[in-house]
Image (cartoon, rainbow, N blue to C red):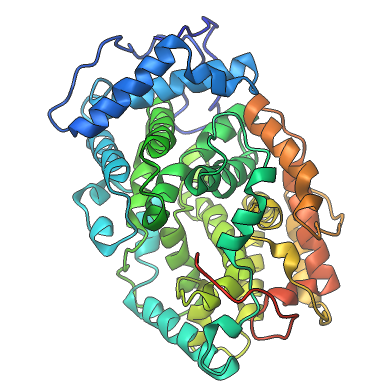
Length: 488
């Protein structure tokens, strides 16, 4: 086993309902130096785990963490070890059905990642989070049908039946252009692997930043890592060659769930439910918002799970995360023929100005719990303007006048969240986000918080107050852009 520094335990998840002490060198779990193989572990997985454990024992893995601080490297290695031994069946939570289901799901993700209805109906979903259980009652097949109808109708009504006529960013081309210029945190390698990059840029970094609303940097980074499991399933169609990387990406958050316990174990399983159909009958923008939380698996990022908020308050960050993502990603989803976007559903419900309707609904929801809403907005906006694949800075054209009500709501959210109203022009190129990416790397590698949530929120304040937010409205005219859409 790799040596782990023997520091006193620290309470990094202080304030959670399931308050736990954890720190490098704590002794609440015994990591076995030899492999004891559960009968449920596939031989291929067992071999890959043993090879990674050998790398940890010889220090080979530590070479990849040289950019991280000693404290972070030590903490990360121990969490990874816990997750690997959990996958082997060597680590358990006695009497916990949720833990057994979470481990079974994680093994399935590593072996066969998929974003399918079969996955959503797997037996382990019985252990999903309270958040997902509640959300499943707030939407149903009707809202999904509306989204399918909506994306087809938009292409027909506005783009002569040709979805690639929608001005949009080709995400695969954007990734290919930019991946060599990333500033990934140390544990995310290789940088050429779309799965690894996605687990960082679309997972740990923005989710961890949002969680700083309640948690210190170390706890926030670890909580944010839970996103990686759903990303692995979501990226399954083009990441099957990433077996060893996928093992690392899944084992670490499973280790985090063990360290935290309680509700953090349940939210692991939420990643399996991306295609869940729901049981509700509501046909409203709010139903679309609920649907997309489950489909985007933002449910883990909540003060209900990692804080002391009520269930209703805990729904706000997951809902606002996905709402902002859908608004900024709408053009790309239409161009890819992808119905999985709230704004498509709202158009399918008959709203003639679906983008504006949903923008106001998202801001109203954020204002219900501004701390959750403000941090979710800042984190998600920063992802779209700095990640290699999204390229939100590419959209150009003539702005329309801003919406006074949207400005009022965002000012209210910013102030009540303890943040500042300080509109700032977002990056206008990938290079323009370099400084943010460097600070993001320090957040993950050294647990340093450099106010990146405020930065992202300031960019959104500029979009709202200037009217540039309308550049993301697919029903409005902007300059022509890419002509392909291989990734949705």
